[in-house]
Length: 302
Image (tube, rainbow, N blue to C red):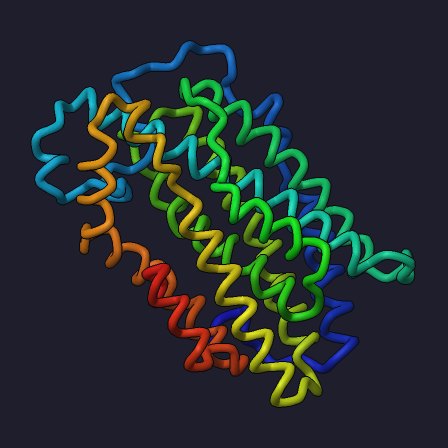
């Protein structure tokens, strides 16, 4: 049993968790404006992410690419992931603000929610500056995802909001833990990943606690409906991480790259293995229903 799975009593456990997270934030937080080396020019001898996480790694196209092309692709893919992170962090902030609107400001959970929002604002600026330094254009999710996100951020509540937050954070967390330790990755990106991993670990703890809290007393129908909502949201989040334009900006044949990326079993396996703990948690909450599994499988999360 992990620290995130320790049983707790309602109310008191939530209070204690929020206070611990506030204390942790006070002891260990970063200012990306000063912690990240923004001044040193981009060294193109480095990757932007661990090459094993590239959507083309292990394909015949990857084998044909020069080392310079491979590095450029990973830089563009890292920038795309960062841009998707900004998009979802903006959704996250609005959902959390709505949830805590007019609640007790003396509650540690209320204060933690504002702390998390402040973290996300700094992370978004950090990701934006990082993507720009990687030489990437402003990658954005496709229009359908943007419009569905607009609806989701305005309507999602309870476990639907917090479990979707958890999915986005956990998928990115596993990738970045690899990238921050990889000496092939350009140093400033490793610093960005380290900052995000440290601070997001607290966010994930809170999201798990809130998901459990919101599900207490939830009826069969509500649980089934929100299980599907979370799965659909997860599909659009994960499928938006790598913008199709990364291949064009890396100087590749977009049609061929998309075709080989779609069939890349190595990348699918990486995604599935990275989400094993997350899927176990969702299953323990009764959120892995048969309709939900359809979308998790389409996103290669299970």
